[in-house]
Length: 130
Image 1 (cartoon, helix red, strand yellow):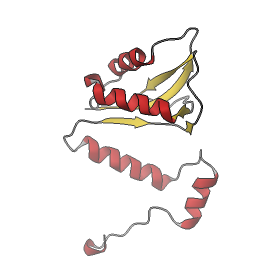
Image 2 (cartoon, rainbow, N blue to C red; image 1 turned 120 degrees about the vertical axis):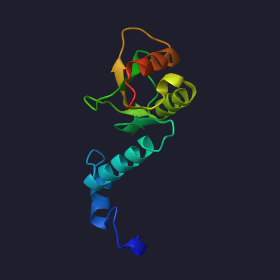
Image 3 (cartoon, rainbow, N blue to C red; image 1 turned 90 degrees about the horizontal axis):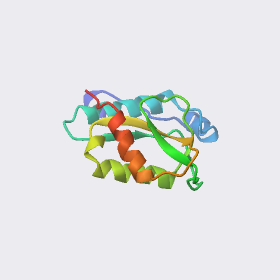
Image 4 (spheres, rainbow, N blue to C red; image 1 turned 180 degrees about the vertical axis):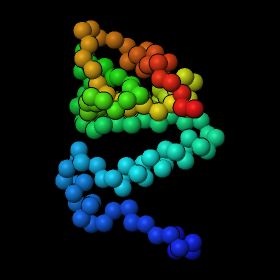
């Protein structure tokens, strides 16, 4: 904002090309602004659910794979847009998803399970932000 003497560039052209050509290479500026946005939301007094995704794909959910909600960003697998949408809708409707921050990943299962039941149970295991 030029009125208060602060200026910032989110991406220059070189940085934008680098990030666009390598989806796994995240810009430090991108991560910084995501972090700032999350912190503003947490401090706003509003209820929130912060959903982090490692990578999107267009694959359908497998019958014997399920979504896993994690508080860490370790060992994350790509998820589909429809799976992210299912988690977001569940978070809107489930009071246990209030004021939590988590990553979505996939994991293999030996048998098919009910995705809605699994998501709801996983919200209970994630500790609310304080």
